[in-house]
Length: 67
Ligand SMILES: [Cu+2]
Image (tube, rainbow, N blue to C red; front, side, top):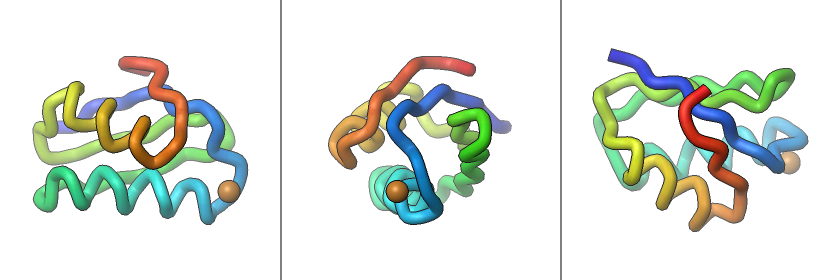
């Protein structure tokens, strides 16, 4: 099960790593794929949206909801 979300403010691979790490920290079973070119984060593992939102925002990025 995968869910795609829009995340704003990611400009480089470091940002992508920060977002990915934040989500995995909040949901250790998650597998995260970031597509920087379109600002999308794909989360596998059935992680609740609110968990992703909280992790993304705590890492300093803009959560834009489902992609
Ligand atoms: Cu960056």
